[in-house]
Picture 1 (cartoon, rainbow, N blue to C red):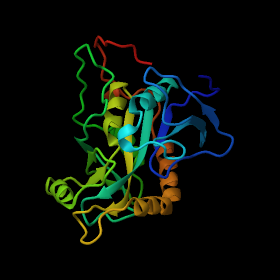
Picture 2 (cartoon, rainbow, N blue to C red):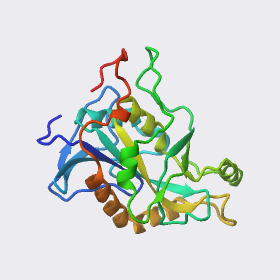
Picture 3 (cartoon, rainbow, N blue to C red):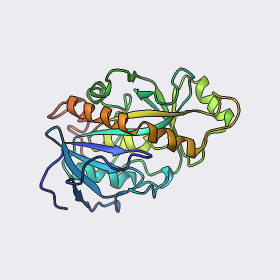
Picture 4 (cartoon, helix red, strand yellow):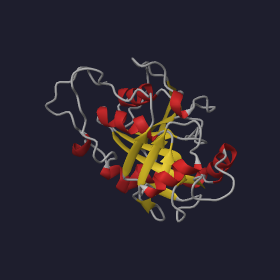
Length: 263
């Protein structure tokens, strides 16, 4: 691993968000104890700030949500010196008022995945605080004009979309968004003491909200593509508004005896 810059902010791009910088960005390959990342990390400049970008699903969308190397991705970013992570993602809406094209910064998460490696601490009795899964400072940086503040994102295993009954059940719980990649990404970032906040782009009304045909991947990708430039503008603004220096609320291991050495 060699890089001339040490980025303190990272962006993990979601479905349809495979690049972020111009051609002068530096490509970095990071070896991790958890294998390869989902794609090469590029390091570039955003308004004078060094930023790392990682395509969550790979540069050509090689990875499905349930096969992503989540642990390798987060470990590699911390290894580069990253302290804060913005995580743009595609979501379905569970409420009619958030239609396609809506940007939301959720404040809560519900995990409905299964079988994913979701911790770095397989021994040692380490239990991380996760009542509020997202960094308040990063959420504030992403809440620009027109962005919805708050909501609960339920994360499903995928790669299939929800049945109509599942979608209606989620909505009855008061949850507002449905996604396939927000867990374990968020908790792994917390374990490595990285500030983390999703920036969700609504691509569809989920199956239980709208009668007729259910969600189709082709429509999701098309909606994401229509909104990719506004999303990149929003992310750049969030980077500019993000604080620098240590974040005390996301430094959770003070005084703890960890079974592994963090990168």
